[in-house]
Image (cartoon, rainbow, N blue to C red; front, side, top):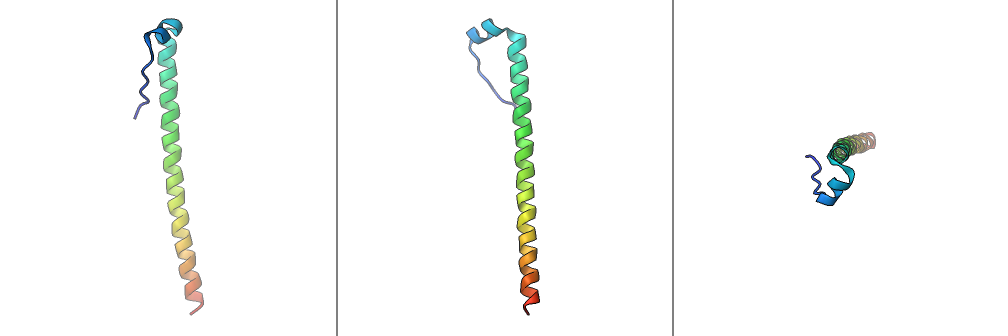
Length: 64
């Protein structure tokens, strides 16, 4: 989902539409990259949970 920014008319007048559009594009890129990193982190956490569960099962099996 793109970053929605509501800049004032004064902001556009001071910096120009090109600069503001570039800023919004950059913010969208940062937002997208953060979402990707969050997804990767969640995936890694799930893998670690599964590995811990497997380790617990192996330890329990060895003690039988």
